[in-house]
Length: 494
Image (cartoon, rainbow, N blue to C red; front, side, top):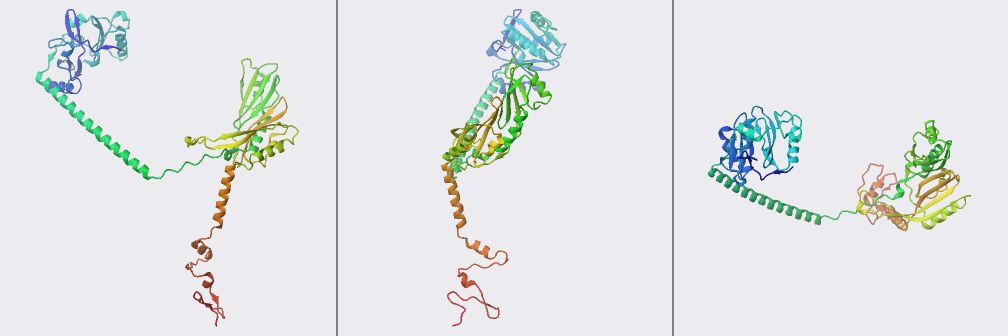
């Protein structure tokens, strides 16, 4: 809303009035000049005129010679307030030569921001309606042309003639001068202190930054994060996948009059089946589900507006996951799979070399650094899923992507991948095996020998450098123990 900050005087019936004063309630009438001084020091430093409005609530208004106001000029708002003093609250808009004069009085106090001139009528009306939402106005004065209910149009000229407007006074020049000097000194001191604080804070930050940099340099670099798990460490168990998919597909292939099942696709999270309508009502398939021919957990939806194709989605119970480390290299995978599937009556085996990139959500900067090679395969067969999966029992790292029942051709379609045992993995396994062998064949330490010799006896034998043979006691003729001979001697008699 555009309030005019420049218009601080208006002319009504040939007389000039001051408007747009800064109004504040008086806390102590005996010391109101001190309050004015404090306000000028902290809020309106360019004010040099004032008036004091007494009554049910005393307040002062501050004016400005820089805006054309002067001592002896009456305050327009004080005149309106005194004319309407029989009620404690009033909201008013008057059409004057300079625009629309907006005044709000609440609890016998002129509100500081609402003694103002609007140059745009719509802005004035919007401000009036906004304040009108507050209840309990004694007077609601607005132009009749606005058509606002429960408002009355009054003339600013009549009210000013009836009410006693209070004249502005000039603040004592010494007071004004002292206020300005104090304000200037305070500002300079504040600015100086602020700059000193900024410099001190900057020095502290630089020293802290330098200290942290020295600490970082003295510390060893952090170890690189471990690679994310290999994809074959959390594979869906192929046998569990085959069992659950078979059960769900069988339960979703019920015969429904007027509908032909096209196919059912089973993936890790859900089973999806597609039916096409051949005759009859589109509602028959939904009725079939109500009567239990189709699973009640299956969500049916039309793929076209004519309801000629229906898609059914059935969530799959959570699958069992296993770790299945690859055991075949690239050529071995090709040979093994071809050997298995070419022996079947029908087989459409296709192999495609593919790289799977594992992304680690905990270390996004390392994403894409861990590629794993796999053979993507597709096959068609008459074998049921569980029987087909068991053909791959000697192949590790198998991941089944989907199992599809093709109703039209009456065979199964399988898709998945087999992860390759890479040369890098072989080298890594050999190094780990070698390290384990070295640990196994490493000579036992003195402490380990001592622990092994005394295990289960509860006796602590002191360890010396004396040969074992020299430390072993020999039995005497009568079963007595003879002390061991010194190194380099025997207990035999010459």
